[in-house]
Image (cartoon, rainbow, N blue to C red):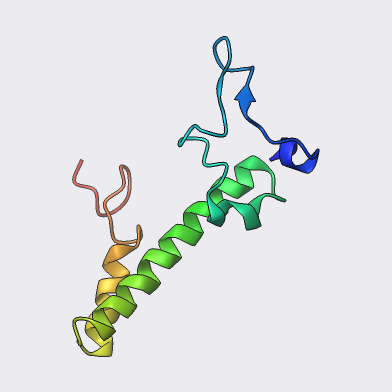
Length: 99
């Protein structure tokens, strides 16, 4: 994002190995539209907000899908939205984890 702020299109990353494509690398997600509003944050903060944004969007879209396509009640749609978010998934070290 610093290259974009400087007015340069980041085609190449000279700091990775002996150089690697940057704009064409899907892992860099340079052209991913949901990262653009977060570009003003520090990278650590942008990663956290990006994860929260994706969990919120997954829950919202699961709720909308359950309500409109499956035509279930509000409570069932809320359950679908809750289970799609990372709140209900067993992360290592969480209370729902079996290990």
